[in-house]
Length: 124
Image (cartoon, rainbow, N blue to C red; front, side):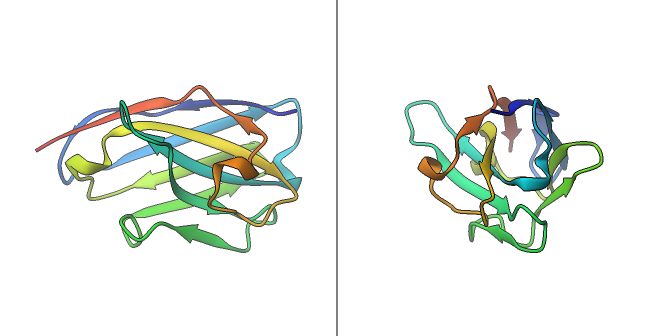
């Protein structure tokens, strides 16, 4: 099992940028695919982006492609989500998740370990 702690969320204005971080402990992320999901109050958890365990493949939901970038630093045992040109509809609690030996699935059921989330608020 890997423990995940997200950070970097906050309140920004539309057009601003944020960089979310997810620090892992307990296991090395070298064998884990990682993903970011988000959830608004009363809504379902939505897949945002994922990266394969070896970092060779990245995937994005269409609404964030070209604005968000996922990256993985195995040396720091962390994964990041750089979010640029933020929109009000990006506001949510963002969660990172880990899938051992995964290729970056977009379904939440593929991920075994989850962080507690970090909130992002975007005002217009």
